[in-house]
Length: 310
Image (cartoon, rainbow, N blue to C red; front, side, top):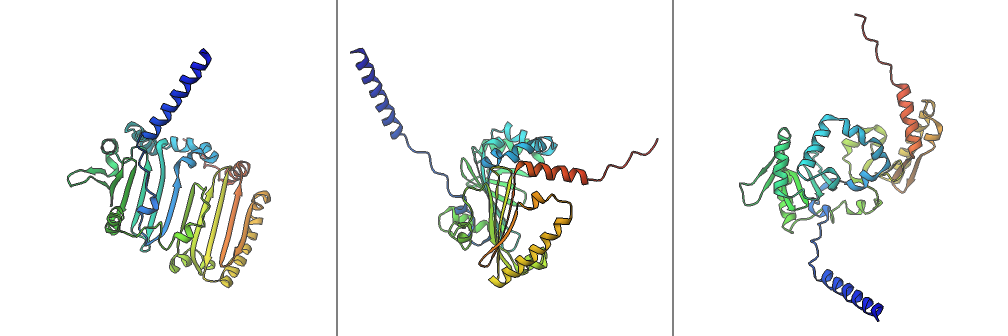
C-alpha cells in the first residue's frame, strides 16, 4: 500500500509540473536576422559564434586571441559588463551594392539591455560606443553607424544610407533579405555551416580580383569547421561556356602549385569542378594537414636578422 501511495503522489507531482510548465508564457522568439536586413543587399554573411567557438581549429588558436592586448581588453570589458563573448550567439551582415552601406544584426544574451551597453561605453571609451537616450527610444552610436535595440538579446546596427530601410523593417513594412533577390542563393548554402556568405559580384570587382574571373556574377561560400577546415565556394559565371573556361584556367594555375613545395597530400584535398554555370572549389584539410601547412610556413619564414654587435 505504501508503494502504491508513493507512486500515486509521484504521478500527481509530475502532472502538476507538466501543467505548470505548459501554463507559463513562452519566451518570445528571436526574429530571423535576415528579416532585419534590407532586401537590396548585394551580399549577406552569417557567423554562428557558438559553433565557431566549439570548432577544434578555433580552440587550438584561441590563445592567439587572448595574447593580443587589444582583443584581451575587449573580452575583459564584455565580461565585466555581463555580455561575455561566450554568450554571443550569431552575427549577420549585409553590404549594399555601393560597397559603402553596411548593416549588422548581433544576437546574444543581454546585448540589447541598456545598462550593459552603458557599461560598455564606460569600459571602452576609445571605441566610439555611446548609448544616446535623449530621444523617444535609445540609439546606439558606433562610429558612423547607428543602432536600435530590437529586444534584450538583439541589436541592429547600420550606416546612414540604410536607416530608412531598417526603420521600415522594424515596423514590419519593409522588404527584407530573407525574401529578397539573394534568397535563392542563400537557400543553396549548407544550413549547418557556422560561417557562410552569398551575394552578387559587380563586374568591376570581379575583374579586379583576377582576369580569369571577369565573368563572375554571383558567389556563395561556407566554412565547415567540424574537423579542421573545409572551404566551399561556388562561383556563378555569366554562362556555362564561361564557367568551363574559368575552370580550365583555375586548373592550370592549380597545377603550377605542385612545384611550389606544397606537400601533394595537401594538394590532393583540393577539388575543382563545374555544375552548370557554377565553378565549384572545395578544400578539405584535417587538423593534421593544417599542422603540416603551419610547419611548412615556419620552415619558409626568413630567419631574423642578427642583432648588431655592440
